[in-house]
Amino acid sequence: MKSPRHTTNTIRRAGPGRMRRPARIQRAGTSAVELAVALPLLLLIVLGCVDFGRVMYYSIALENAVGSATDYAATHRFTDFTRSAWEARVRERVSDEMQGVPHFVSGSLHVTITSEDGPDESVRVTVTATYPFRSAVDWPGLPHNVTLRHRVSAWQYR
Image 1 (cartoon, rainbow, N blue to C red):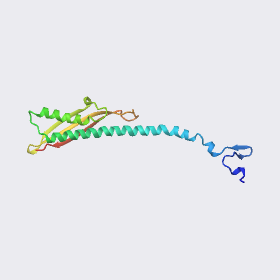
Image 2: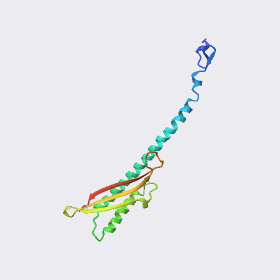
Image 3: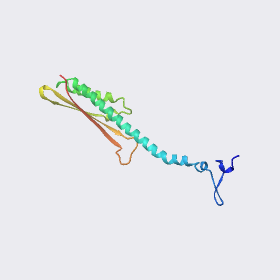
Image 4: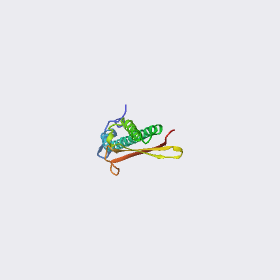
């Protein structure tokens, strides 16, 4: 038979006249305190990742929309008489590509189209689009509103 001092749940003497509790009982609230300390930091990291993901999503969507509009502009030639209709279709292409973005507001999208004559009657088309982005959390030290801007240029095909 084992002596009482070898069991894990007994109260042992920690010195002359003192009683010491088992280690399991001393750590009863430690997990809750650790969670209370770590949870705000973890939530801050998660919100930061979500906001960073959102700005990258909007930026990539705008870049793809401008690229698609530039492809359209490079493959469809225009004349002096058809330029305004051609520019309207290029702007419409950017807006159509951005429709899949959550909470997209077409009135906030600004598209600029420029063209310059090159050698041998070629035309270089540049499409620039800007769109405002607002972060979900107002981070200290970082701007709350950011204007995303993308520019793509291409030579028109003959």
